[in-house]
Length: 442
Image (cartoon, rainbow, N blue to C red; front, side, top):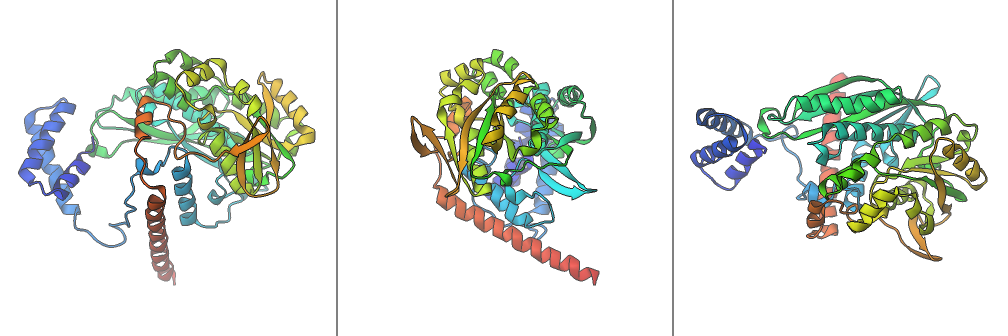
């Protein structure tokens, strides 16, 4: 519970301070193991702080609201709204000197230094794994290492950020760190630095855990999405999913499926592939995560300005059998959910050799599509006929709560207009403050 937001909303609704104080104190007593005197004093202090910060104005204290909530727009849900929001982030950042920048919507960024490419990436833990810290740490670490590998980089270090709400048990940060270092030590990538904080400091009650893990790697041959070319084929490995599948399993009554997600198949396959003579011939790689194959094929087509054709016939066989059975039972579209498979884009003449190398790591890989010249789009070919393969508003709803949350969408075009207006306001603010800072240098 965010006590500061509770007070701000109450004041906006016209509630008097005494009523707010009593109401907030009652909420605090329900969550915290404390007495009424402390709860009342704490509530009064929150009200005082909100009063002191309510009427501030200017660039440093206000922002242009979009009038659209994160959940309403599907931010973080790997669908149309999420992709649109991320493209606005790229606009705010603008063009940089990076070899691979955020505007290319790739798995990681790259800069050139010392004659090599330095790769940096970061992934947030799955928000629904808060009560399962080891799983949260394990899967987010595997995810960030995947993002480094698919850029053609050998990961050399990890960093982490852990936030636990005020009432969370300190043991959560230890279990989370154990999950991180289990993967790191198995792949010989050290965790070298990080940050540990409370969510919102004193202002957020409860035990929620959140955080991220990032990786830095070094590459000589980049395999960014922009290198995808007409005539290439798409090769995909088998996948059992990660944080998303683990979450679906836990909250839908299939806890036994979680065990299938605990593996290093993707990372080991990349290690073997990068040491192979065929690796320099690969054009691009990605992991099947962002809204499933639907989302990744869409993003690749947009970035490379090509038409990507996905053949539906072999994809189902690449989903781990127990995971697939669970998804089918729950009526979850496996094409729209993260499978954590490796997707390789390469010339057709080296496809067989790539599959052979991947198989030497004990991982199956098959051709699932090809790249054509034409309109940047992704299509799904079923029985010889092409169908739209655009991402949906959100990734496949994979928990009971998500299935409810998906039932009341707002008008997407209306929301886009608000999001665009807010992003343009942020760009103008950035330019104003940069102008001030640059003027101060003269």
